[in-house]
Length: 238
Ligand SMILES: Nc1ncnc2c1ncn2[C@@H]1O[C@H](COP(=O)(O)OP(=O)(O)OP(=O)(O)O)[C@@H](O)[C@H]1O
Ligand SMILES: [Mg+2]
Image 1 (tube, rainbow, N blue to C red):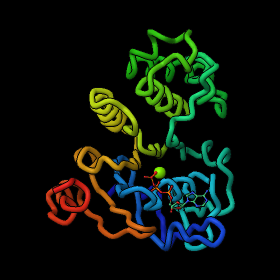
Image 2 (image 1 turned 90 degrees about the horizontal axis):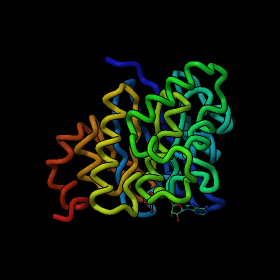
Image 3 (image 1 turned 120 degrees about the vertical axis):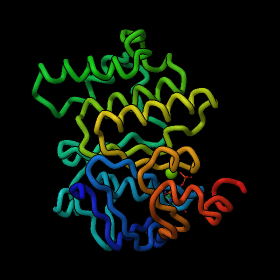
Image 4 (image 1 turned 30 degrees about the vertical axis):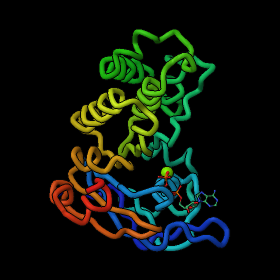
């Protein structure tokens, strides 16, 4: 079996007195695409922020490559390969597409390899190449999502965490984004995908977890979950 990259055990995260994540367990193995699905307020983003060091956690632990990440900061963890594309993308709208991509590689010193990765990102996202010298703020929401993913790939993630990449996009763009997620996964990148679009996310994934009110309530093989009447009733509107 592939190596476990990320292991979350008994994780608890609170905002002041409000417990948003109430003790969850899950793992992500090398080469997998794992989907974490659940409705508004379930605690998905909070979980992603704890994993990437942007929020401290109160209970349980997160291990990356067998070592606890407790107390480590986001910058530090990006260098280790835990890279998140946040909800709402977070591209730098007043910088060009190329500058945004270069920022993704800011922790790296291997100039020749960075140039190769930039070429690879442009191959994966031809739209970014066409617009390379334009300001990121002039791009559509879907294009900005691609830029945010391209920027994350420039950091050479060991685990790429995507927080609702399809949110707020037109149906055509949603198709395109899921296609691109699949392409990135096919290139060998391990992906943790958070989505409210359960059918699309499980359709792509190897395994899935359902989160409800701060707890994981279902988990398993993604294809099995897709055909589970309970999952279908709760998340696929059936
Ligand atoms: N900064 C904050 N301060 C206080 N409570 C917060 C904060 N951020 C989130 N919460 C609460 O924590 C819970 C989990 O929120 P979280 O953003 O993790 O959910 P989510 O699953 O990502 O939802 P969505 O699908 O809407 O993005 C919610 O009840 C939310 O209101
Ligand atoms: Mg969220």
